[in-house]
Image 1 (tube, rainbow, N blue to C red):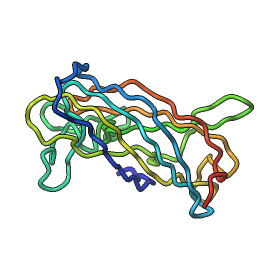
Image 2: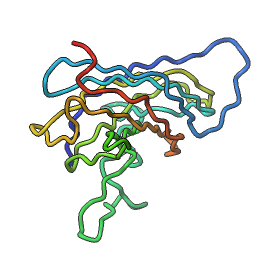
Image 3: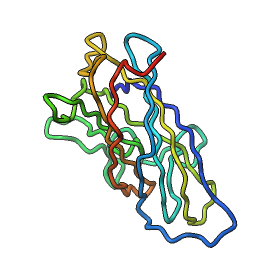
Image 4: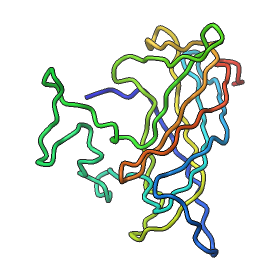
Length: 198
């Protein structure tokens, strides 16, 4: 089972009101809003990302906790399964990780010689996460609002991380809905790691 070295916190701001329901696509659309970073320990930087979203059928978020609406749904399981519920295996006979066990995806880029390069992390280490259902309605209903996502970016050789203090980084963000539709991809503004206060 892959390890996920992050401690995400999601804060959701959903905008609704008594007005004509807007017409959005069923695929989620997102925009970058802001980024913040705070240094609380030498070995990590706390990153806060805020994006805005629009979704035409409102099927954003996963409740796969015990008793949740999505508990046991193979679409959101740890590994891919076929239509009979059997594990899908790669050429070496290993189970294939299911991308959609998460619904919030992050890629980390670091500036190297004036250009941003996608960073590779040790196997199983990533900063993806899961945000909960944004609506408890069973009826399709357009949603818009903001998602705030806070996580710990681990630094240096102690965590086998390619990111360290003084590096300039930016983040690529994408989300998915429960129909496994992916949103567009947005990029954050760049920040300098370790230069953001205590």
